[in-house]
Length: 337
Ligand code: SD4
Image 1: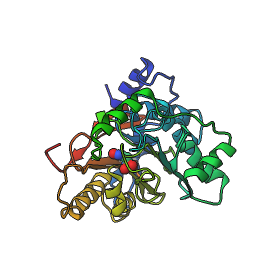
Image 2: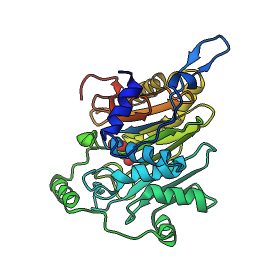
Image 3: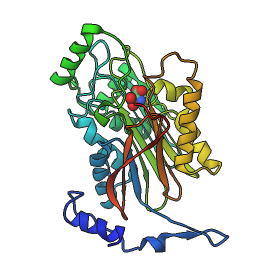
């Protein structure tokens, strides 16, 4: 059975949990020919998201796209699923707090016109990605932080809520006993969710949302709300997004660099790999590297995608019409966890 037919069958038996409407175009009809006659496969639309929680997020974003919702709103709805899930301890509601027991959230979103919105150090609002979208839509700014971002969210009709669940409070109290700061990486394969979408027309959109590194200092902001670090796209080239230790990604302008390498002709995986290797090299003067994990996902204008991480354990969810919604393991540089 072909991959496409297999996917349709899987969708019919509920892999997606929704009835998905398919276009009648064969993937081969969507291929384009280069001047030299070489065929480039056009696998669009396609969604790629970091970590296992990307599966549920992809499913919702796909469903929204199929019903004609625009990619920005489809991303807000998709990554809104892990944001609202208390079992996901690294995003939104139930996210692990900082060392003062405060849940502080970061998110950003960017569209194919390079319009973007971002919020960081946001407290008491469950869906920072939706607030980031409001920053994009309703303000002349790109980034809003802290109390100002919260007041803006309230003025846009968002509700203030307690985001610290009993489980996360318990985990914080356990941590307080030793109070030793050690960035937590690969938490049960749940981490920041970054999502990249290429729509049927080949336009790119991305979003990223997180509660950031657990036990961070109060006021610390990572890469995730920073356009160019946690997320970047250029609709002429491709899109990239990060997960892992935000400080390392900011230092190297990680996602922007991945896009620039794709502009120079690297495939998405090659581009992610080169930046992970650069990050490793830039940190080689650090005494202890056991804390360091970074991972990138990327997609180019042809719908080719890939990912790469420093250490094993990183995976991402990919959803397309041909192969359905599935987890793929990232290639990585270091053998040891
Ligand atoms: C941060 N990159 O705040 C985010 C969170 C993350 O492993 O992915 N942590 O640094």
